[in-house]
Length: 378
Ligand SMILES: Cc1cc2nc3c(=O)[nH]c(=O)nc-3n(C[C@H](O)[C@H](O)[C@H](O)COP(=O)(O)OP(=O)(O)OC[C@H]3O[C@@H](n4cnc5c(N)ncnc54)[C@H](O)[C@@H]3O)c2cc1C
Ligand code: SF4
Ligand code: SF4
Ligand code: SF4
Image (cartoon, rainbow, N blue to C red):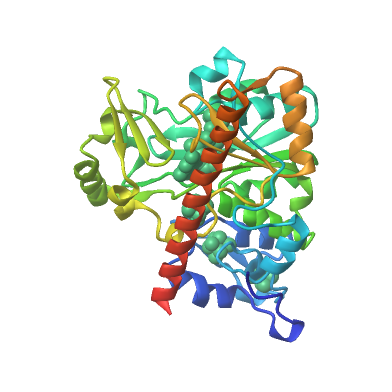
């Protein structure tokens, strides 16, 4: 797929990320580069006011090249990573593909699709298989903040994609963004003496984490489980773009109760009306970095979850690794989650085939979009 690791005499550093990623407008402000540089106590990098990484003190750069290698927009370690993870076309490795949902009414009440993510984490926490999980909680419409959940109540607070009535658009300033810089929180874990943490993230975040793990750099050794979310795009927009967005989708953002993404963007309004918005109508406010991103189904996670392909109220769940299988099977046996498929062997097989076909078609669509974006820039 990609190029292999550069040799030592061609080590690339944050200087190269400025040219190859920032100047091309495809930095997703994920915080991966800063997170490693400060966890390694080099402190050459910092996060600017707008969330972009920058040199704090270039003199302190020891030219280790790790910020470059772990950046999700750099494909330099792809071959090594694919080999380690046993990546296979078209959507990465998997042991099971299933529609599932939580058995907890409390979780079902607040979750995005079938509450599988929150249930798997609740199981793993209650059985002490993990000490906590990096998730994100809502702090405003389109705004979430990473948090380390150490109790099932924290997980409930982080679940779902409902907009609280108490959130006011005016309160979160002029810039709205749905991207959560969770990778930055990995750094804090070492300081808290955690060594068995789960990470929930979008494909770019899980990819960055896997590259950290491949290079065996701190603080990736604290992560014991990764749950990835399918992701077509994330959004970031200002006041002007907000008005345009409201026009494009025909809904006032103030009247949105819940936002979900499956094969399109699903907007549930306060009055209960549901509007399905095609991705093209929200392209204007998608983050530019997302157009260069080629992973839809979170190919490198232990377990990947999305709504695509499952009936409403269920999570499409891809169990990919041995670690993922242990958690998934345990949660199912202990009745934290249950599976669904239509009655009858043929119907059940057909459902799986259709689920897979949908995921593959979105994965290919995203790969094509990334190729187009990067190709156009060259
Ligand atoms: C930005 C984004 C884009 C998505 N795009 C698609 C798509 O195109 N197609 C599709 O089928 N599914 C998509 N999903 C996944 C889908 O919306 C659900 O998250 C998934 O099906 C899991 O549902 P659940 O009920 O099992 O999760 P829940 O039990 O509700 O748990 C959701 C978990 O995700 C975390 N979370 C929520 N928002 C974010 C965020 N922005 N960044 C990181 N973590 C977050 C929460 O903290 C929580 O732990 C997307 C999700 C996100 C966040
Ligand atoms: S010290 Fe390493 S991680 Fe930090 S900026 Fe330099 S090359 Fe990047
Ligand atoms: S995409 Fe992430 S790792 Fe790459 S330069 Fe931007 S913040 Fe750093
Ligand atoms: S589309 Fe890619 S870069 Fe954008 S949030 Fe999703 S995984 Fe990250």
